[in-house]
Length: 356
Image 1 (spheres, rainbow, N blue to C red):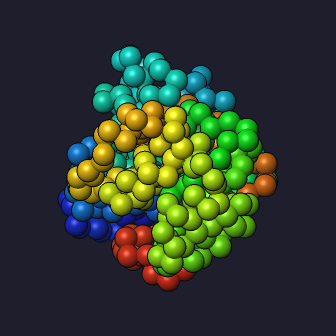
Image 2 (image 1 turned 30 degrees about the vertical axis):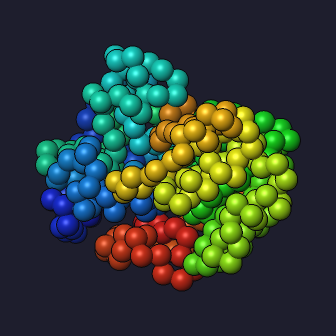
């Protein structure tokens, strides 16, 4: 049986290829891909900008699918059966190092791998990324079963939702009744918004730009108490008006120097600033004295280790329209356009997904 997959043989090259579907190795699970969401990290992998990218590879790490076959050894590790609808965590830990044995930092393991980023496709069975009609689950993968009511488009962003849970709960330690500002209404900001509302944060203010109108509208649909267009109103002034004294915490997703400086300025004394946006190598001057005098905690961290199970529960509540985040649908052969749209953000674009 021939299977189509989009291969990146080296940075800036993309080829739609056919692979012969191999006999499922004993320690693998064969999965038919249903949806793979396009992540901004895919841009960096495609261009060769990430230090952990290896080539040739099949990209795609935000994956939902349906189990086809469970290898004889894998059957002893996974409680899976054919037709189970599942999603996988992108990071594969080695299980031996200190990081891989930790609950929230196994994504820092350097001996494992990452689906769609560091698993090569040059040797059988080849298929270790989500931009393929089928893919294999390898040993060490953490698998989560979808409920019957969970949409595949929502399940495919479980790791993104888990990022939001991580920044709100694990790193930000935001509790019931605390005020929060989320800078950036992209998929990461929207998922952080849902996690914050579910934790009882109040009020939650979401900041965006002129080009974020559709994203800010969706933030209101999620339940944001306030949204602010920072191209029309100074963000610090707006937050001071909406949250007198400043918020208890700020989650800064943009990664821009301006956004980070504004977060430090607007947060209340003894507040927390969680920075998760990448700046692309730009330096961000911060008045360090301000951090000290205001007793601000500056926290950073990527990954969703230990938070995906909670994310799946959050999706399953049905309270938040996660399925609306993937608002652009593409075919596999349109992947290059999907990545271009993810980078350039045409009007109305929030996030794209490849649907099989």
